[in-house]
Amino acid sequence: MVVDDWKEFIQLALNFAGHGYLEYSSFIIPEQKVEKAQRIDMKIQAKFPETGYDKDRRYRNKKAGQANLSYLRWRNIGLILRTEGEVNGRFDEEKFVRFDEEPFVFAVGSMIEIKIAKARAGRKYTAYLSKQSFRAIKAILRDNLRHRRRDVAEAYWERLKGLPAFSGILGQMRELTVWIKIETKLAGLKKWTGNHLVLRPL
Image (tube, rainbow, N blue to C red; front, side, top):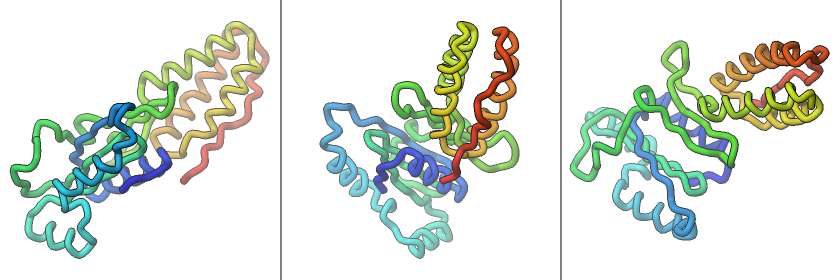
């Protein structure tokens, strides 16, 4: 399945993870080959016809102890997702990892990196900002606050409303809200006047 929106890409990956598609193999199509992406899609679907099975065929596969597969791509980022079960020699096993053992990280633009991983509580999976991306956001806010550019910091804060409301990201934004109030005081500024950050669910 090819999607045009990175938020939908995350949502679908999480939906599959929640239904037992915990193993994945990822790839990035080089920029000079992006125009050939549809050809790459067709090659993957030919190699793994299971990605096109309907619901009934997937159910029969599961009952027979066979692995089910799905394929997702957003722009030049692809994911082959797989359930537990019997597989055959078409797979390069060293390329498959599990979300709960090795989170999937991909970039959305120059500043934002998303990590799909196990939620901090329970057995569910969610999306976070990567550690690198979260630190970069804090660095931008801290720099502007400590140089007393509160209006710039608040404008940047408003831009973060474009992030999707997955539970992992919501938790990070709550943490950031507490931190930014402390930073405002350390910078000798008056109370943080940025609006409460409300992220929208898909």
